[in-house]
Image (cartoon, rainbow, N blue to C red):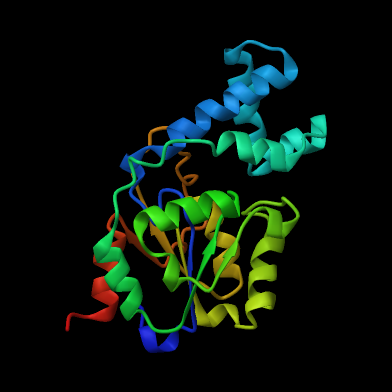
Length: 224
């Protein structure tokens, strides 16, 4: 089990990690991405969706592919795709209490925008616990799992990877963290369209797996 006194920085992905995947916010974002591409390129939605997914698998985010191949303005894109209804995310008093007990610094590390992260964190009621949001813009729109964002987090926080724990729902984003000494926690869910890890790939990652973030945090902390 993770020893909290040995952790200087707790690193949390945002979407489908800080809130449950069954809130299904990404379904809204997914539709907005398809609409954006369809309008941008003048193609039908099935064609737009196929390109959207191809860019995601090739580049880590759809945005990265659109920037490279179509010179898309990333701010315009992110504003459009994150213009969603976040009311399916319920306030999370138990998460708030667990984060309050967690020693050390806490940050959000997301391939989304800071504005989206701020809205979701406010809805959850956990904003006050986080020192910083590292969003896609902070990394020059280079997404996880590219190694540069991980190196930047370590450098800007001034904390070695060995003193960090990363909570992340995308298995592909865990190996670069582990390679930098971070303890990795895979927050699994049943999203059918979310790519599973490749068979046999990175067999030693993650270090821990959970489908209950709050329950795991309580287990790490112990009960008062």
